Amino acid sequence: MFGQTTVGTGGISSASSRMFRYEVTGLRQNSENDKNNYEIRNSGSVYVTVPYNRMNEEMQRITRMGGTIVKIEPLTAESALKPDSESQTQN
Image (cartoon, rainbow, N blue to C red; front, side):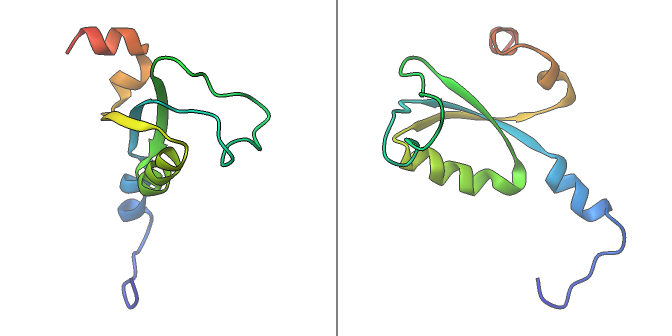
């Protein structure tokens, strides 16, 4: 914000280093993502990892592509190392 200063990177790095995983269903090929060099998988869930400071942009992008966000979970050092199937079965 205007008029606020931060000395060092301690205040900035905590927000930028936080990561979240979106579980998304219903993504489909459309004019928005038709420019990609690859097709989108039509079945099942897709997992998207997003930094905290890009969460809003990614939600809007997913919505434009016809997807539905089923779940948002914060990633910790432990959960980032586990495969998706393991982290879901231990809930």
